[in-house]
Length: 256
Image 1 (tube, rainbow, N blue to C red):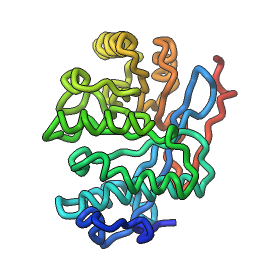
Image 2: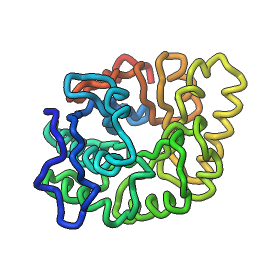
Image 3: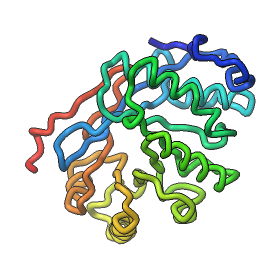
């Protein structure tokens, strides 16, 4: 299933957005669970090499010359592969904020892929990682606002581990905020992390932001967040990323 950017989606005038990458990639999919509804909320598409090589093996090949092309190719490839796998939940796609120079233009291939596959726009979620330095926060805010107008779900990833933090939230309110795994790790026994996270959960509640706890690896971590009213969770405790497949989760093992 590992393919490069479909030539059929290259539009006249795209120019350097579609320079040849020179390598292939594909995706693994990790479930995001809704512990309140006891169902899969969606899947995050995580880049992998064509033989299941690590994300680093692909991301280390990204540079200023192919960044735009790679970002566009990721969106289209993720949508096509998810559609082939029969995904009918939310599809979460990471995007590179510094690779979007004009939101309306750069979203065309995404919309075309959604139309071609019949994938619902409202089930596409775009994650911006807070750990990547954003040179122009106003530009990022413009991207997010444009995406929401299109009907996409917006999410801020790795919150608590990045460059902008609360300043990012002051500029734009995403639909979903993903708490970084370093704050999640051992939170059931770490009182300092509990104070920080509980304050963050309360702030998000007032701002109308849905919290997602990522990187959960133990039952104790899961139980802590469930007790705090956090319904969306993700991590190895539920399932490891499935290479070109959609792993499930048995909710019956939990005493809800």
